[in-house]
Length: 233
Length: 233
Ligand SMILES: CC1=C(/C=C/C(C)=C/C=C/C(C)=C/C=O)C(C)(C)CCC1
Ligand SMILES: CC1=C(/C=C/C(C)=C/C=C/C(C)=C/C=O)C(C)(C)CCC1
Image (tube, rainbow over the protein chains, first blue to last red):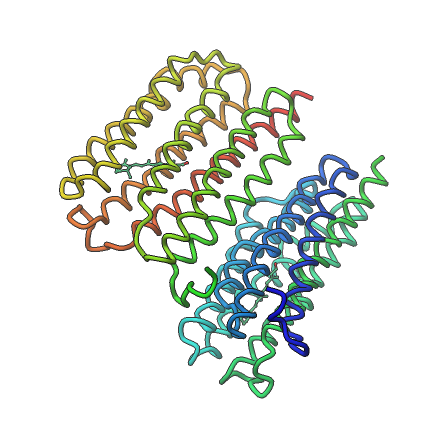
């Protein structure tokens, strides 16, 4: 395996750092789970599962990359199909003590499904129309943004009596707005799309975004749980 | 392995998401087991074993699929032979505090054996007669439905003093009625069967059904255990 990562293959480099950082993050979250109050344990477990699922798919993706130097689009979307809904569940679990209902979770997951199905169609099924599918996908993302910035989720967080949840939620949604924005920028580098002059760097964008949004987001959840545990004690 | 999952092979896609979600669910159940009262720990362990057994067989099945694009019928039934009886055991464990006897477990397992043996004969041994074997298989399923909707199991649950068990049991049996119904619908897409116009999607139906019935059902058990632990504390 190792012999085939050429010097200067910096995209391949990020597949390797992506794999290892996801695996290390999983261990971190699962072990740290032992130090927080019971009601936060499930959240840390979900953080660990998100990075673990990613670690497995990065393992496959770096293999595809080394063998073909093509985008491992299938594995990318297989990974997102599992991890994005889990991130919606993180929002739900964090806001549950504040009274979150499953309707909120359904709306977040619905937005994710629109976003990912349209994105997959644009990248893998009818790439000639990737601009149109990108726009549809962005609408799905906009539903999520709406829910957490103006919808029920934002109201619940604002009404929460727990300061750690309140400030933590603001950081979480900032990830969903700013961190997730790296993905559509990557997508726009596809041939025939708005930034296609930069073609070839879509995987670099996705790998950087994944590290920020999976590990960084998990660390925010971890921080909320740690802070709340300290103040509840 | 990796190179051969083609763009647009959405059945292959579900073999991969199936594999990973089963593995993640196993970790979830086994770790969360630590947070419930002792008397619920065995139930969560069984949930974890069901998804773990499935993860291993999905690993095999996705390999068969990638190599041949044919239904991995053998592994499908090997998996069900192990996991369906374990689901019967889940019913038994949940109703044990309410006084379940092993007779109930035997009846559930008898129904499962009829259902699976007949289904296997129809799919793999004499496919020309798959309609007849499908009907016999459905009779086995009907025995299970009878037991949990009208038989002893339903009476025990109704008489239980534990609210979490009572409402949880209703959700569990709903899975066995509605979630399990996806399997015979998939089976009817076999050539020569009632819905054969849809031929080729039997694996898609089975993969979706497995995710719902193994992970979803396990989550219901988890929810009962969590709720009961909170109210017993
Ligand atoms: C808006 C948009 C997209 C957004 C993708 C996103 C936001 C993916 C997020 C993935 C995450 C957060 C995974 C973490 O576990 C696509 C599909 C690239 C297509 C173009 C339009
Ligand atoms: C009724 C019927 C069938 C039912 C299969 C079922 C209900 C399988 C359930 C499997 C589960 C729940 C596995 C989970 O671990 C067959 C065999 C397709 C054959 C056609 C008739």
